[in-house]
Image 1: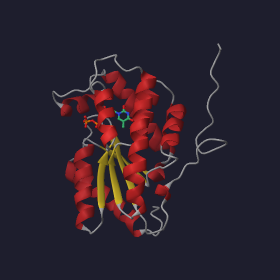
Image 2: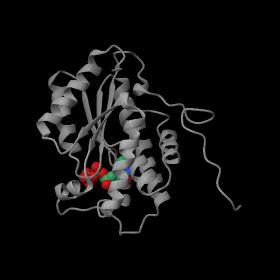
Image 3: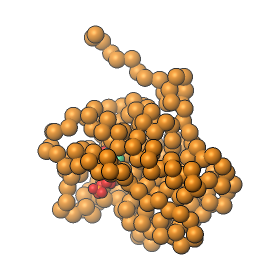
Image 4: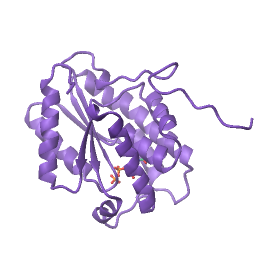
Length: 238
Ligand code: TYD
């Protein structure tokens, strides 16, 4: 068949996958799903570690996890997608591998943790696919989002903490270690950045947007303050 491929339905509507906001938790006092997002070198892992330690210190069960690579299957997929030669994975295969990693991660780690009332702190989630594959690889925001939503049966974080980083600064912070995506040009990383910012602008209530160039202590304090509000609210909503 030639000609344009019809645009898939928007997520959350029509015959698309229903979007389950606020973790789809079974009970108001159930778990909380927090995701950290941002470009390479934004400092997500540092903030995720600090947030996890603070939550654990307040008596919560914390599941500190990551994408790609939060499961045994995910670790193999991570190796495939990040450590091949440049050009070894075509963009659509890349999007599918990240979606497969996410499907396994949600089904075997994230949902079980939320169901038993834990706080899940994930270093990257679905927005990374929208920003890297949807925006930077130009596969399309809605298509990539719909693919990932299908993979996770609609599960969205209660809060996404977006650490906004300038690509040049991110590169400087990353140092010498570069995986296949980190090796992409600054123009690629700038499209990633714009992809993340567009997501945060669409749903400001579900995002905490922070300037990653600020001191880590200040950022950690803002993150704690926002998460504290979520933990105190009966339904986890701001
Ligand atoms: P990450 O684990 O954050 O990098 P690090 O090696 O610093 O621990 O992420 C790995 C790379 O994968 C990063 O460049 C972003 C990219 N990525 C995507 O392109 N799409 C996705 O859906 C995800 C989760 C990550």
